[in-house]
Amino acid sequence: MAARAGKLIGVILLTPAAASPTLYQPGRYAVDAQATRVHFHVKAAIGKYEGDFRDPSGAVTIDPARPGRAAIDISFPVENMTTGDASTDAMLKGGSFFDIAQYPTVRFNAEDAPLATAQGEMQIAGQLTMHGQTQPVTLSVRLVGVTPDEAPGLSTLHFTGTMSVRRSEFGMGFGRPFVADRVDLSVDAIFRRS
Image (cartoon, rainbow, N blue to C red):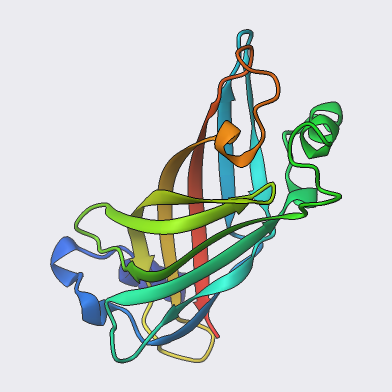
């Protein structure tokens, strides 16, 4: 077991020289809902608001004709968003902010995204849909690691990323200026070949 874990860690820790468009095997990589999260952070006049979006669905799909590009489509249920405080969660999910009765999901999609390498961050232009509004956004992504397609279900992709949005652009300006308009997002995502 220890030898297998050591081998897997060795594969995941890629060197920059190993990164290239052929690093990725074509196919559909479903998001690992248990291992993936988006953390949000918003400054306030007193303190801050922060929490996590969890349990996403969706996938990264790599076209065999273009192994360095991918289609990305990921959705997060707002119901599973959490700050660790029940009253804050209820406020954010209510009509003044996310209004989950009408807008139950947050979605990010990109049609022709460049795939990140171990050599640095990659800028992905996409669309973010939140609170019934869709706006163009840019996600800065870094490759953490890739496991090879040694066996069915073993091939995985691991990315981290950052993005900032203005909540007022999505119709959620309530509470300004006491709560900042800017929302900083950090992503930790794992995808498994399906």
